[in-house]
Amino acid sequence: MPQQQRHPAVDAALGRRRSRLGTVWTAGLLSLPFVGLALSAAAGLHPGVPLVVTGPAALAGFVLITEMPTGRDRGQTSGSLLTARTVTGLRTVDLAQIRRVRLLTSFSRGGVSDRVVLIRDNDGVLLGLRVRTDVRRVRRALEQSVRRDVPPRVSGAAAAHLGMAPGGTARHTVLSWLVTVLGICCYLSAVAVFARAV
Image (cartoon, rainbow, N blue to C red; front, side, top):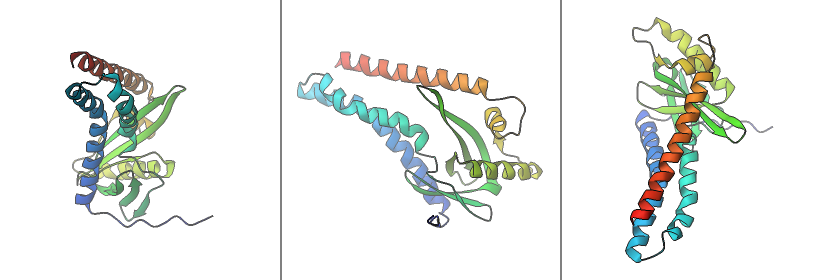
């Protein structure tokens, strides 16, 4: 079995730029149907033409909402630093300086398809972790951080997923599903309204 390639730690400023780049890419893909409709109206084309081309891009944008910040493989540690490769490149977070932890849940036709632990450190770098080894590292780091003057903000769902709080993630799962469905419906409605307007 080939040995996993070592990842060098990444400067926090570069990590923040890669976080912002992921947001820009996602927003750009989601805005393409509106841009395409505006251009088709200016060119006198039927609104269905740009939607055929830009629709798949918008679908990719929805998928990338969870994929952009998430590590593609198991992260590698050096002291308290954890480095993982994301879609926009390597990012390094400092597990000794975690500022916030949230849980991100995505769905497929069969139900819950993925749960990602999103952590942001004091340098503002965002990284999503789904590999169990990395999730255990986050839990250990949080358990050690209780002695800090300002402990990290950990959502109830993230604490439950990490096994650090009683209860489960049922409420979070239902709310995430509702937000996902309502978000997609509102987005499609906005595209339809804009298509009729142009």
